Length: 167
Image 1 (spheres, helix red, strand yellow):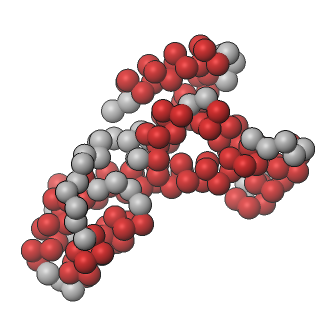
Image 2: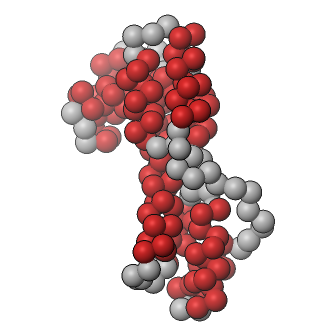
């Protein structure tokens, strides 16, 4: 995933309105800006406002931007699951709450809680990258699988390597 760079102050809602109105200069400005914007509601709104297009380069830029947003949304989901994953309440009660809230199987809810617990207790760097859309969900899942049977120190060493190797 590409890294979001520092963006000079820009009124994204205003740009989005101009794009929706069909302003060609605003569309061109948005296309240049999209790779630099961090994921979140404002940049998602801008992406949604782009007119249909057949330009392969633009399609690639939009695809990458949506992938950053999916990573960001996944980080938000793990954040919402964190109180259940790290609470002192009985695990069964928490599992059922997460399962029903997300419409998952018991196994799926257990996975969400396990990933959330690891991100919030051990893998803060990975969580930050996921929140910024700078690492994919696949990298996070791979990290969790690779470190499931390791102690915290060994898991931290693996995290450093995964982060370094992430595109």
